[in-house]
Image (tube, rainbow, N blue to C red; front, side, top):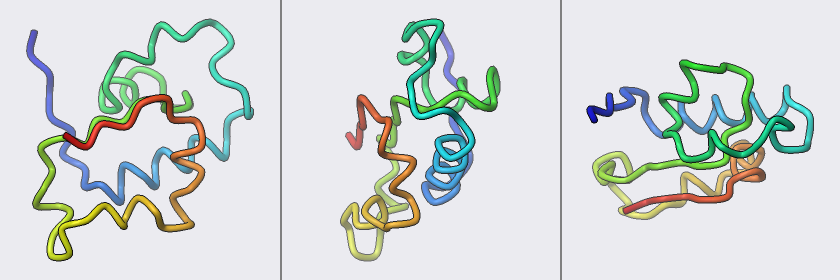
Length: 91
């Protein structure tokens, strides 16, 4: 199965997830959690208002440069994006 790479940068992905979290009700999807295994790119194209519960940011090491750390994830403006996460992959 071919998975298309998300061409957005990490700040764009986090901003989109924050916007979805702010516009959606605080509870997770009511119809079930069966979509949590899909990557954010696929979820973004299939349902634009669904809360993201899984982020796969692996193989994006150049985006964490020059400081080589994940401090971008800890910025207060991106907190809503991380509130509903069940899984965060940085590998």
